Image (cartoon, rainbow, N blue to C red):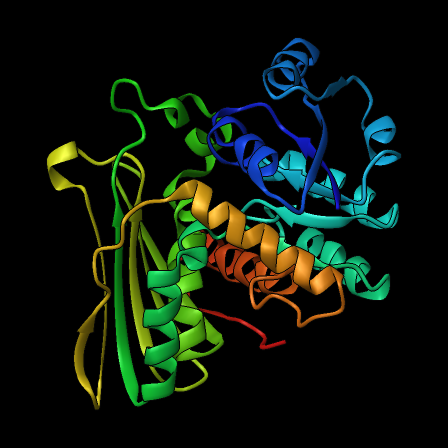
Length: 300
């Protein structure tokens, strides 16, 4: 499958570009970015073309991998879907549920495959843990702390304007939701509270009547950083084990999932439709924190 890459930032350099270049079933065609010079430089690094025009790149590929801020990604993803391209999207898909749902609907209507790169969900250790948790059942509670800082020295993501503006809710919140939703089921009610240092606390009621509590931040003091998740239920207390970080391995699995779906196999459970569900919950959380009320969420 011929792939184009949209984006030239740290995530494009760390995962997308080397992942596309290394995948045996992907032909890496070229790169487009908002900064033409950066797109040309990244393309040259991997021996592909730099494109100054998105439509010119679309004309050369079957699929796009997108590593752009969500507000930039959403209209370009819709444009690519309307042009008949399969999509490997970054999370969150968009900053509004309406935009995310329009992308998902267009992909479905045109019979196109999609995957949202919820990175850890593509690591086999986490996939195996969640599959076992789903099979076990009987869970009544989950807690996820995804709390750290991107503003320490040398962290490339600390220079990201959209992360500074949208914070941990939109940056690491999708990862936390991608972990609890398959185990506890759809979210029907959201309550959120924000505190200093970009700390967001979410209380979610699921359709199973289970409740999950998520604590999210990308701006805590380093000594307070933690990444922990645990499920509680009839089987007892089951913490998610430490999982080695492997961005390139996860990206390869995401490409595999997209290729399989595009070839007529099952849709990825982390497709654009799932990405739209996550966006709807995050949007409800933002509204809850702003209005100091619980927000009902419709189950698709």
